[in-house]
Length: 360
Image (cartoon, rainbow, N blue to C red; front, top):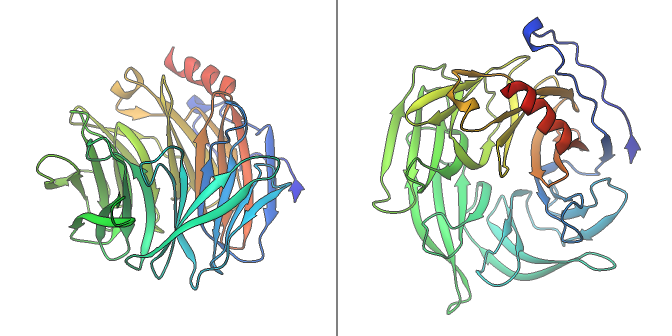
């Protein structure tokens, strides 16, 4: 583990955006023996403001849990036969308490209880073979039936939902959707009618596909005037992920209008979102390690273009990114293609101050 400060980025920005630079108050890193293939931050149950736990799925099929400063490695799973490509955390079996779901490239799904105490224990409780080539997963009540679903996105242009069945003691498939082209990114969140939808941006296309999880389960192909490397997300998005495609633009849809996040620097390789009580925070990382933080609410989103409120430099060669918000800070963790992990803490008081200044 090493402690290092983040240098100022060399990329110039317009003078109207001056004062964006921010030096993270905590910036720690470690190096793995095998490359990280999936990344997730878990809320700590120690205190409300406690730093999160870092979960890393590795190329050799292991899953590791670290403290946010990487000084402790709490848990290590037995290795699967292929890389861990998807991680999710929530009430996967609709029981009390959240569980960690890991999925490997060949479809091995493992359910873990994360037991916090004097030492953290990663306890496997269930195994199931599902479809291969799953690249992302999220746990949410997407069809609004009061029960959680496991939503998975696959590399073969397919999105599926599963739900835990107590009678058969396994995850059963619920729905399946197939889209026309390779998925460049996915955003899952509430529509204008407060129903959950998945928005899948199509690689090399000025289109995105909107999938409705409830009601008629319809699929809508939506056109845009934006560049083909643009990704799209609803205003109330809870989950957003890119899949290896470089992004040149990000568009937020609100009330049938397109609002753009103003890009500076290079093409975007990492993207994440946090919904806070008073605003939405979006974090991007480009191919040069330039990290931008945007924030908007119902007032700011009226603008055609939304400027970043701060920037910092993270590790270059970032391939995976995860973030989480607590009452005290937003935490950004990145993993590189060379096996390095780094965690950055952005205090909430700084975000609130920058946001208030941008809103005035």
